Length: 327
Image 1 (tube, rainbow, N blue to C red):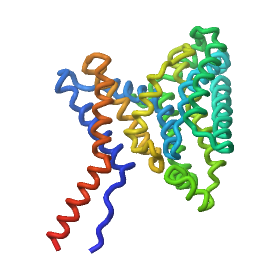
Image 2: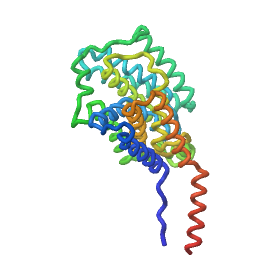
Image 3: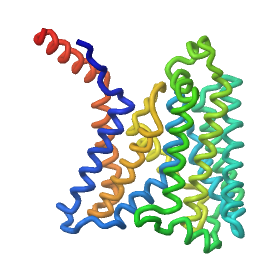
Image 4: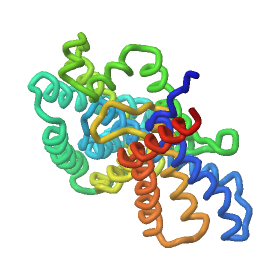
């Protein structure tokens, strides 16, 4: 009798996390006494739009065994450039932001790939430098966005629950899923994250893929920052570390590993949705703001426990004993 292998962690972890949060979200009327409205779903997807592209950027680098700390700096610079260049044309502003983000990512990817420098010190230095650049571009103050058409357009409702901003975010995940699922890039990134030396021996073009990866990460972060600045009608030179932390939590809930070698865009989307829905649960239930962080920590602890090697070994032993008894 042939037994099929169980679900892999990159599929099990995000599915379990999202299922728990969806059940909690659906059960909030039991606490509040008020039925959920379409607007609650819209707000949850707006939360996804705020953090989704950042989580995708970090998650993709984590699949390859890297960690892009600079995404929040690129997020800030992208928002600043989008606002300053987009006062008369929002499209021009976003294109300028995306181009800047791609250039920032490509430079970092080149340093990491060709000089073989670890990503953490490179991206940490870039994060500090980018925050300085954002302050220089804005003279240390927030810049107001005056393009009313873009402000109204980016958050207008589409089909009741979506907005252009959330649809662009979902489109980013869909594009990443298509590219990683239909080309060699997905398997190669996981190979790089699993064992870089073996990947080179197998003929994987590690350096090229790392440059492409960090270019994509910078592009996604800058686009996310530009869209958020349009939504807020201003660009902030220092978003703080909170977006980075939440995006990292979303990536971990999405089934990626800090050691690299696993993860999918679909899983990252599930992780980002889990984070967005948790924030909406706190808002709907009128809980204190700090409750969000407590929920993130609790859910992450559960997911880490479910994915722990010790638990997997225990489950494997139980299965082996069960099969022995059945035989």
